[in-house]
Amino acid sequence: MSILKKVKSSLCATLNYNKANSVQVESTFVRALPGFSIVGMAHQSIQESKDRIKSALLSIDFKFPAQKITVSLSPSDLKKEGSHFDLVIALVIALQNEQATCEDFYVFGELGLDGKVKKTTTIFPIILSLASQNEKIKVVVPKDSLSKIRQIPNVESYGVGTLSEAIAFFTNPTCRQAKDETIDFNFGKSIIINNQEYFYNPIFELDFKEIKGQARAKRAMLISAVGMHNILLEGSPGCGKSMSIKRLRHILPPMSISEMLQSNAYKSLNEEDEDLSSTRAFRSPHHTSSKPSIFGGGSSHAMAGECALAHNGILFFDEFPHFSKMILESLREPLEDHKVLISRVQSKVSYETKFLFAAAQNPCPCGNLLSNSHECRCSDLEISRYKNRISEPLLDRIDMYLQMSEETSHEEGLCSSEMFEQVLKAFVFQKERGQESLNGKLSEEETSKYCLCDNQAKETLHVASAKFGLSHRGINKTLRVARSIADLTCEPTIKKEHILEALSFRRR
Image (spheres, rainbow, N blue to C red):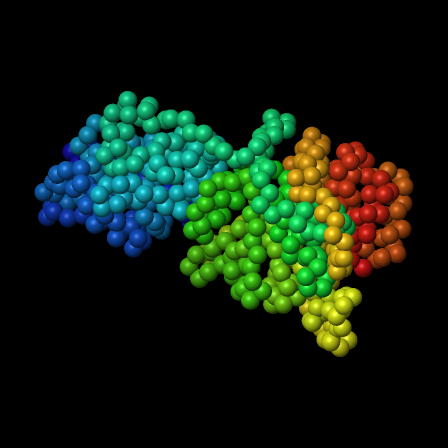
């Protein structure tokens, strides 16, 4: 009974793939030869923390008792790993004989040998996952992580820089109030629609004005950006395919805080520690990339792949036909279901993949089939094999197709700022209509609800469907592209001209 009175506990959490599980951390001093043990299926990364914790406690003149220190991590049947357990273990030991309580707080942080509290890349996705599972949580985190953690809803967060500050936080209530300072964030500009705030960056590092001519390509980029529509560009080398797609990122619609948090959480899971940004992700893997690197996986950890890292942004495949057949065919599910499911013997992990898929390819192996100045050296068989690497079911999942020609015009045309103004206007029109998803990511039910056509548009789509043999998926994608075209002029109903322009971007 006397031993139970001396048990000190707090909370931490561990990642099980991409989901966080709460862990109760308890400590007690018992009569035995002096020692320090951690029990409860602790990974080697936690067992190695003993020396860091001892050094950090000695740095604040903590007097180790002539007893055995036992730290328990429960539930005991759950695997725990990560250096972010350092701070909470040190705290339950240091506060063992204090009246202070820390049972209601989640505590995260890696300790330096001098007692400094350091951030880790796993803290952010852990707290984001905990916040989605609980109505309200209180956390103590390293000061370096505080700016990002403060953006997570339902989280009351406090920052500490050293172990001594963390101890003072729990032993002195006045310190706790002082830690809850206000932090300013700069995500560029914002717009509020239906009581929801969306952020965007008005700085265009890559500008469409650098692309001379190519008015139709810019129009396609504009429509693609409005609805986050998948797009495939085909043309001779040097006609501006990659240039156009790289500039597409900067005119994409604004992002909400929840979208920014989720995208950043996936990056943190892959140990890519970046600040929150209103600029959408842009991932461009090489065509020699392996299947696990694109879709995620691994023997011990189901890591997020490029598809998940591109969530809410752009996934760009340059030299599209040169990717392996296995990767190309595996793209069907992420493009259709907007998620990747990684199955393992003991668990299944799901990542959301609502990205804009953009691809670029040459018209033939040598690239000169559409060129006005160079002669194609490929045989018909070589061209056929090259094009057949991309199957019809995959092409059917791409909303827009554009064949780009070599440009002789030197007109600048629209610049990125002008294009983004049109995207922003269409974005507001979509959100005020009540849509949660952008046009390109609407479900079939939402397509029927929001993509309403007048009689002429219905008749035109019916005739085109019979003439070109459009699949059910192709009809829906045509409707969604037409909806984005109508949104550019704030038309509540899809008209015949919108359908015709959408059909002009269908691959036949």
